[in-house]
Image 1 (tube, one colour):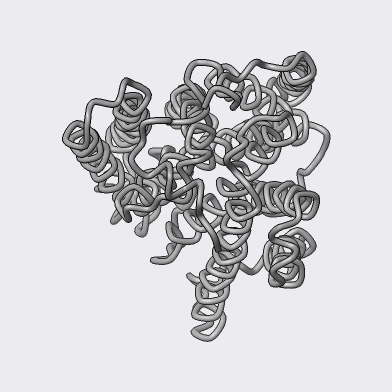
Image 2: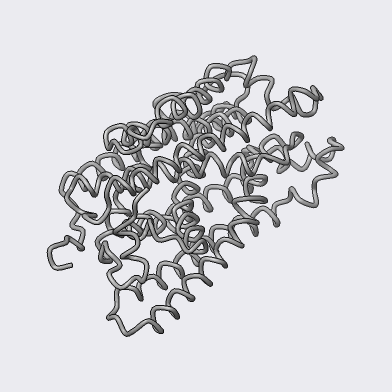
Length: 408
């Protein structure tokens, strides 16, 4: 291990880019708040806060996917990812920061008089039979409690998992200690996945996103949000792995590992498409007004271009480009596809949320990209800091050898 670079040092360009993007994002937020957030037009105000909202949710969920990825592979006794496991952990370390931003934002939105969520308007609800029936679920105490629990336990359980993995950096003291440590990580992973299932895979997307269209519902919605987040999270992991490889780190990570990341990107892009098609087909075929209301303005209205561009980027491009073996082993091609899919699923969250907030016109503008720049800058900055705190290689992990000789 002596010749392997195990300690990451933040390059000056990385720091400059992250701070530059944060500055662009802060300036965009200030200008947007003055010109739109303080507008007398409630629709303009809602569009401004909706832009902050979908960016915050998207970046929180894709960073949280990093911990889901670790825990799922840990329970599967997988070894191939150990060579770059610290990269995934560093991404997941941003969850408490993005979680705090998202939690404060969402709680503000439901208690403010913006009524971004129609069910928060008491007078409106009293005159609506459907919303009256949903009050047991769509109410302020439950929304706030569930939001705090979701973000709080994602952060806490993720921290426990990262803490357990630190023991693989300590001195090797025989197979028994390794087995005990492995068992602790397995228990920590189980707890995270169980809670992740009932939050990110179930109730949380209903509250945060689907309830923007409180009259509409889909039993597949949470799975759809998860699939979109998962592909975005995988693309993010891939980008950081390639970046560190280009900087001379992760010497034990090679084309075999990149190939497997490519397989995941390809497979779950197809899974996302399956969920997309299954949800759309059932609603299209039944043609019930209370169900088609969600798709009508997305397929036939102002969002038509965004809706189908989303499909082209997130399905057509992966199936044409990532199907072949060489493309998944090519660093340039994988970088291109990772960036494209990150953008594609960002666009997917845009149409999911903004299509419900502002259904009569497209709001995509400089503000959307400026706020995205803020979150990207924060992401780069805090992932870089997290990478410096631990060795990049878990040299006493019992699966490290299997990861080094991994062949696909």
